[in-house]
Amino acid sequence: MYGVVSFGAAALLPANALHAVCTDNAQMSMLTSTSALPCEPVSHPRSVERLVTGKATSDGAGVKLTRVLTQDLQRRLDPYLMLDAFGSVNPDDYIAGFPDHPHRGFETITYMIAGRMRHRDSAGHEGLLENGGVQWMTAGRGVIHSEIPQQEEGVMEGFQLWLNLPGRDKMSAPWYRDFKAADLPRFVTDTGVSVTVIAGHSHGVAGAVTREASAPLYLDLHLPAGSRLMQPLAAGLNAFLYVYRGEITVAGSTVPSQRMAILGNDAQSDGVIVEAAGEARALLIAGRPLQEPIEQYGPFVMNTRDEIHQALNDFRDGRLA
Ligand code: CO
Image (cartoon, rainbow, N blue to C red; front, side):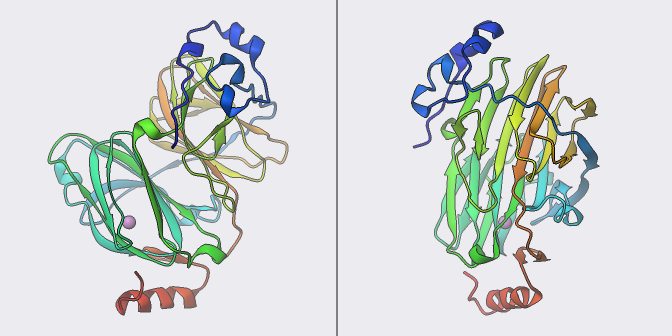
């Protein structure tokens, strides 16, 4: 259903050949030709407002991870609630996984760079998440799920992002999809940047998932040495980058590995320009702020304390899922 869009042949052409044909009115049906890659110029790029070093912590049954987007940044990075990065070659750091636990009121997006993890939930969904795959779960009114590693050794590396739901959707029915790496929309720019479009739209390519209220954009960028990527972003969106290999430069600021760069919301800005002197990989994430009250108690994120109490009561009484 979600075809891979490859610009592999286009990437081999000299850059000026592509510039000569790039267009802003690309059609999905034209994506196999070089003329389909829109220029998407950015004339007022966003700057880096601040760099954030994550906090080392553990969750689930003792999985070691780095909480990159912490609770104190939920307002600034609305509609996002959390970003965890996990990565280890030591099975003791991940083997216990995340046994059965509840969620209500938001969505979880798990992106596995390397490793294998099995998801099961109370809505009857089950999936094996592995190398390069994405699992998108809308908890809505409630699920109880588990995420258990399916390996006893080797590298386990990936990310879990929490995306808030608007109040009117917090009690919606749970939803789940998983996408193997080969099923995720992907393209390569004229400078050789490989872009996986997990959510939203980039250069005319629609992501695996789109959402109206929060308008999430979630891109995984693989930047070869000496490359750069322009990505338009409406000024009202909150946006950040997380670098997980090498380092990048954004409007003159260096963003080192394992750092999140919160991008400024200058009203004049129309996008971001990401440059890499050496090979680098980064997540670019943006979304439209919901501008609603955020009440979080562990795995429940609602608008009011009463709704949190209701979630706790429902969970205790077996009515959550
Ligand atoms: Co969970």
